[in-house]
Amino acid sequence: QRIATLTEQISYMAYKDPLEELLIMQCALTALRLDVLVNNPKLTTIDLTRNRIRQLFPITTPPKNKLSVTFLSLAANQLERLDMSMFAFMPDLERFDVRGNRIVRFEATSPFDTRNLTFSELRSIYLDDNALTELPTHWGKLPKLIYLGFDRNYLKRVDMSFFGKFPTLTAIFICENNVESIRTSTPITMPELDIMLFESNQIVSVNFTGCNFPKMNLISFMNNRLTTIPPLFQRFPESRLTMEGNPIKCSSMTALKSRIVDFRLRVTTGSTQSDCPTTSSIVLDQDQLACCDA
Image 1: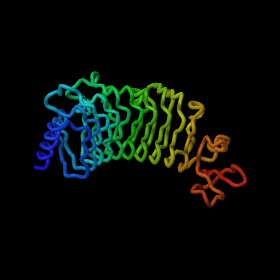
Image 2: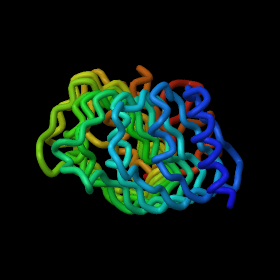
Image 3: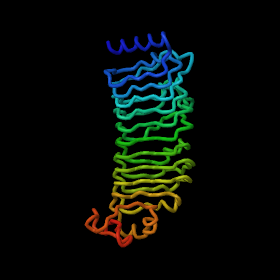
Image 4: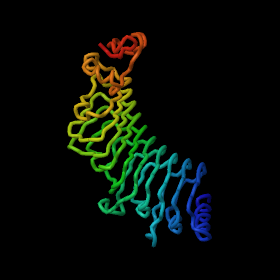
């Protein structure tokens, strides 16, 4: 009854005066029929954060005019599967937030051919705090995407070649997953990529061979299981690398001591050996040690 009442209310409001913003938060909404949005061509903001939405019903009749929505949030609901093709009538969408759901499958498929599905203005997608076990494969076209976040999912492996389909990306965040390895199956060039965070995973191996990221600024592997420092400075000479919270071997750290001193490489440090969570250390200066394993 609440859903029916909500549908009637939105339709009534649209009839009286087309909506520009729709904010329904912390309610008992369990489903959303996208048809109710069609009569609101001026709608730019839809925020449905912290409801109980488990199901989205697609539009049944293509709208005469596309919606003007630029921000859509379905964060903190109960969605398990999400098909981006449902939002094809929102060509101006810039930010899409589905953090804090139960999403195990994210795609852009039926009823449209993904080659023809384009979100020409979409700049950021937030998929944090879901249940993804692998990187989604079907996305449609996202020619302006700059931010992609997968924090706190269940990813185990990352193939950097996946991101080659988004050459405009500037930031990739995959923190607090179960990632064990990073590799690159086919060469990619990402001219704008500036930051990558892979913090608090289980990473033991990294291979960026085949990656061309000319603007790479910061890469963080903080709190992983790496025992050697990946040879990234040769590939990304202007970048900064964060390795704090890894059991790095002293021999690997010693070879890059100058990078630590120049603040290009961040590692776990202490004033004395007792400050270190590792078995040994190397001297950086009279006041500071870099913690490492013998």
